[in-house]
Amino acid sequence: MKQHTMLAFDLGATSGRGIIGTLNNNRLETYEISRFPNRVINIHGKLYWNLLSIFESMKETLAECVRRKIPVDSIGIDTWGVDFVYLGKDGSLLSMPRAYRDPYTERIPEQYFTHIPREEVYRITGTQIMNFNSVYQLYAARKENYAPHLHADKILFIPDALAYLLTGKCVCEYTIASTAQLLNARSREIEPALLQPAGMGKDVFPGIVFPGEKIGLLSELISRETGFPRVPVISVAGHDTASAIAAVPAQDEKFAYLSSGTWSLMGIELEEPIITKDSYRMNFTNEGGIEGTIRFLKNITGMWILEECLKIWKRNDKPYDYEEIILMAQKEKPFQRFIDPDSPTFACPKDMLKAIAEYCSETGQLPPENGAETVRCIFDSLAMKYNYVLGRLKKFAPFPIEKLHIIGGGAKNPLLNQFTANTTGIPVISGPAEATAIGNLLLQAKALGLVENRHDMRRIIRNGIRMETFMPVETDKWQKAYREFLNITRLEE
Ligand code: LRH
Image 1 (spheres, helix red, strand yellow):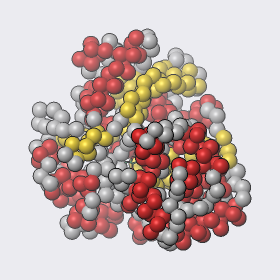
Image 2 (cartoon, protein in one colour):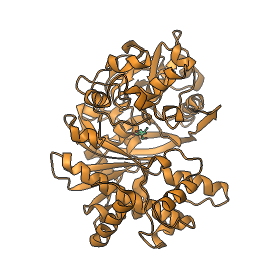
Image 3 (tube, rainbow, N blue to C red):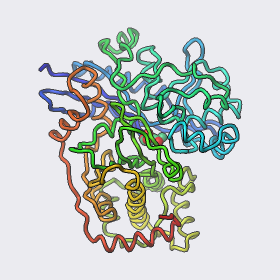
Image 4 (cartoon, rainbow, N blue to C red):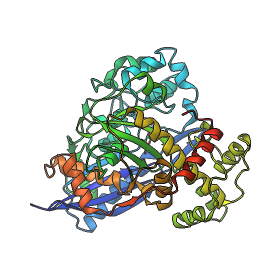
């Protein structure tokens, strides 16, 4: 079989990367060819992503491939969810995309529900209610008479917007669209009624395409500018989490996954959505996966809290690296204080360290006094929250959950992996850390006809990566601490 080389653009909330993947005789080899920062920019109190800078970095990546003579056969793009850009009638970008932590959606869902009741929105979409979902962003934009909204001809989600910049073609990829809370979970089409409160019709979205379809060829202009050949840009699973889950190296279906990065997404893979009173009450989401699967999951605030603390420490001349952080937490006394990572106070505070201290004081706990105590508190609390969500997930899973696969950057934290095994009482299997990019690459390979289905993809991953298993230990001690966590956070079981 001819060797195939693919380029994945994988964009998260803190950085973007270009990853080259080569598939040769069912073995995938990957390496990073570029890495660039992705930041939120505050303009007059509105938060934006710098899409043009991302685009520029993507073009530089293409030029770098040419310089290194890498014979790329196709390109795929995956990004974080929910955010989007507006295009004018002439196809020009009307503004940079607003970032999902922009406070413009605070208290907006409640106002939206005066048009369509909350239960009804969930019943149609099966999507968890989160302030920042595109549906509420659109409604908020309408309410503030945001000019790009008022003049929009088309709306493109971030991976679709970047594909548009590369090819000139407009599509609406299914997995990314499923994060918007605008899709009918059953028909998998945009539900026009949900757009009405935002003053828009269904035609602002291009037609849905599914992972594996071709979007178009790299534009002639970019090809000339970078020297890169006019290869196809493929619609992969445009949502990073969907790409990551496509890359879970599971052998059978009896697993839960935790896609661990800025967010921790914990869930199971299903054939059909689960939309019930209980799933509504517990705010589980049914997002779209590859090959018609449903990602039944919940968002848990993940490394965001730590990332924000690291930024503050760096500003204060304490630039800890990841290994140092893990060592610090390991040496610290366990269970001294707990937070609920999903408390709204941690969503976008001005000062994360202060937010943690305040949370502790308000819940009758001593605030952390140094970096080590802070990090230990974050890891203990995350492991506890994972157990909490897993407990709820088990109520829905149509199979016994026998193991937890942790994938994404957070899988490189052996301490937290062990804590998670201890608190959940099931084996935790870590890796691949590069799940989003690997999912992206293997979906390109599938589109090129090189692999058959997700089972093949997962076999290739199992054969090619080092996975580590963490068996639960000291479970009694962790169960006791879990009770304490529930008490403090007032989470009901
Ligand atoms: C993770 C993620 C998650 C979304 C959030 C906005 O990167 O895509 O799945 O909920 O970002």
